[in-house]
Length: 99
Image (cartoon, rainbow, N blue to C red; front, side):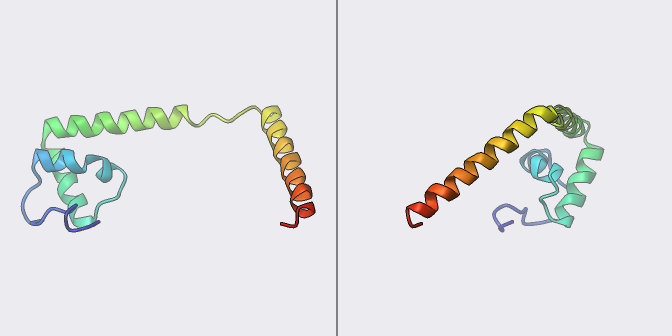
């Protein structure tokens, strides 16, 4: 994180505007420990920012749960076979062209 992305005075309490600016990175664990502590304290103390953080966490959990499905085994096998055939054809055609 560059100096332009990190607040200059980390001793001060976090403001709402700062919390909103860094909320995504905070939830993704992409801010340093000092800023994490300040943001965590702010979302605990500020009802508005706490609700926004909770809503974002809830949304992320919903998206994660919806993206956890796997393709049926038969479809995965057909894709694997198709990729295997494509790779074999590429190797055969690539070796005859001198590549």
